[in-house]
Amino acid sequence: MSDTTSSNGVLRPDRAQPPLPRDRFIVAEPPDEEAVPMDVLFVGAGPAGLAGAIELAKLVRRDAEEGGTLGEIEIGVLEKAAELGEHNLSGAVLNPGPFRTLFPELSDPDFPFRGEVKGEAVYLMREKSATRIPTPPTMKNHGNRVASICEVVRWMGERAEELGVNIFPGFPVDSLLVEGERVVGVRTTPAGLDREGNPGSGHNPPMDLTAQVTVLSEGTRGPLTQSWLDWQGVGSANPQIYALGVKELWEVKGGLDRVIHTLGWPLPRDVFGGSWIYPMGEDLVSIGIVAGLDYRDARLDVHRLLQQFKEHPLVRGILEGGELVEWGAKTIPEGGYHSVPERRHGDGLVIVGDAAGYVDVPSLKGIHYAVESGILAARGIFEALKAGNPSEEGLRACTESVDQSFIMADLRRTRNMRLAFKSGFFAGGTKAGLMTLTGGRFPGGRIAVEEDAAEPRTLAGAPPAAGAVGELSVSKVDAVFKSGNKTRDDIPSHLIVGEDISPEMAEFYEHMCAAGVFEREGDRLIVNAPNCIDCKATDILGPRWTPREGGSGPAYRRM
Image (cartoon, rainbow, N blue to C red; front, side):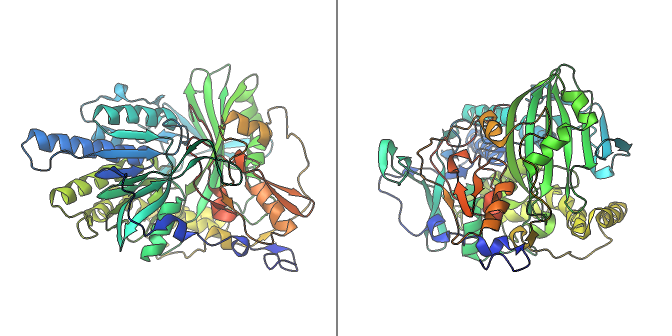
């Protein structure tokens, strides 16, 4: 029997997971002689990276107009998707405040949001009924905006280019280039390799880019961020923990006049999470479910839970007669205050957004923290460049300014709310209520947690019945098609699988992955790597995720 599975059927995902391949991501080599020179490079064109690039470009322009001495600064943004927005997914109801800070010259109608939250409702769900409950204070969305993060990112990219920022879509970053303790640039991932990793038609070798400062805005569970933190020995009070969100867009016959959040069914009582339904226009709704990846049932399947959710009378009444037009999934950092790295800067490097863990789970918010962190990073980088000192000491303000901002103040206020639910739904709800009433002071201290992969799992009960849950269901194969997946079938696998994967662990992987990348076939694990939509759940609980050819993965348009 594999040492990942005990004699009583308990699985330990961490024992089957390969170690982080840090030496691949941290490369102590000088950049190529033909390296593209930049001054500041943002790795990832999400809201954090683009906000940072925009703010930095504005500061450089203002400095020049005021007769400053900084001179011309080349700013680049590298993005692994073929087009901006194609790898971005969120609910999303966002706080527009940092967008107003970034663009003080614009009024609210100028932003690419879908509309203001006009009404909201929260329901406690049972399989056949729903009870409306008062909206918890942390979940109130008055004044917030419903948005498509894909559309927001594309719009931000256009604003960045207008300011002279160099946008490079289709260029994943494979490694950080370092000299001593200093990050001096990046190396991109090669393209056009065949299944065995040999150059094929359309082969493009890796490209090096140099920079005085590299900003990791690579989003949730970024391998460069993990590797740099490990290399530098930068820790946090708790390890980061995650949730998996699965989302669908439906064109419907009737509109929705409010944002809806639900608690309870179809999630088991020992699983943290919830569901949402958001209006995206007169005939479009966003629907999704989020589940913490510390769940104990090895057969829990978040994609299947969403299919069950759609059959509930409350949800079915909204979707019936409509059409599924888009599907996707993404992991979310949920550890909060205690899981934020103690230092998010180093010699030639800064970490922002989801990569740093700036997400407040009780309010279901992360986008405005990402934007604000990008703005603050840009200001710190600007001052470091002016001083000619982009060292760890020179970039210290990039961490300190966030620590002194509303980002960390908000995360501290709710620091134990998500962690309290480790003791179950009802006990967690009671503790979270006390924390809300006391502003996070009681229960105080820190609730210690383990990383998600260290949580033991059990193959409980009978396997779920094969086939569709109901008339509104979509299979994983059809769902991946709806994501717009562009991956070549003959691309090299980007997943590092552990040795001696037991049949039970293979079954756990099959249910864990929303995109059908893993299958248990008899006693074997089958890996369908081209199905991967880069949600990163596998990197958290199973085989390691690594960057692959640019333009691979989903092609989200309105997610």
